[in-house]
Length: 354
Ligand code: NAD
Figure: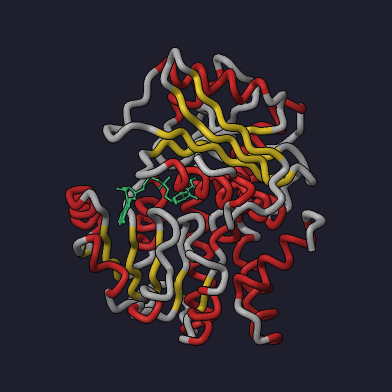
């Protein structure tokens, strides 16, 4: 594994832990970007990486994104993220989860974990047997906490409506054509909310059967995963993995808006300017996809620190996402700077790194 501080994505991260537990076979990276506003909060991704350097880049980029996301959402949390490097079959054992829980606990609350791609509520329960610094734990009906996916999906849905109004003048989602990449927890939730509003949906997933099943449930159409990015639509909504907006893919987009939940959609910050040059409105990923971390952060603050918060607080904070996007788009239009740069600057100011 190359030294993390030579990576171009290293951004003065406060701490980067490489965890290897020989007994369980766990290999993980925990990256803490900033604890300026509070403990570094961000989920754990369980993934098979073709090479360890890719895992390191993911951890560095994702943890910086969490600093920005938590700051922009007004949460008293810093930014952290973990990746667990799985084998090709993505084998995840109870012993690995226990060892990972020990690694989180050893950081003494500087890092707070939750679900990300490849993780379930059951995984968080297993990790919580070894560490108190876990959120996204199962919750009862109407209680905060639990799977962040539906909360993330709701924020994205509200953000897409705001983007459609801003870029297309759409009063509602009826007949607005949305291409959804990824039909998992977030993409599936976004698609269901949009379908209920009468949007015209095109769905894709590398698990083609998953996309087809969701399409038949919602009366939508599905296309092969390699077609979704070039599908003509009003809104392209990336809800799979990151780095899908590149100097090669952006010229192929056939949409007016990019608004979705995947973290780190832009391969490079400079790609935001390419979107702007094409007249495509971009909803910065870490602003639009903050719903889940809002929910689980408040769950953590209530459990660990006795904060008095309820579902109304969670929903109220998620409802602020469209207004935050509007502010970014307005500043972007007023200054001629791409939306991602405007948002980055705002976030950097909030975490004392402007
Ligand atoms: P998930 O694992 O439930 O779903 C991801 C889906 O994307 C899967 O169905 C997978 O098959 C599909 N996929 C992967 N690569 C694809 C590709 N190239 N083309 C089409 N489909 C592809 O994960 P999720 O929780 O829905 O997260 C999706 C994205 O949203 C991730 O980038 C995640 O980091 C981000 N995110 C999630 C949350 C949350 O609350 N779950 C919060 C913020 C951001």
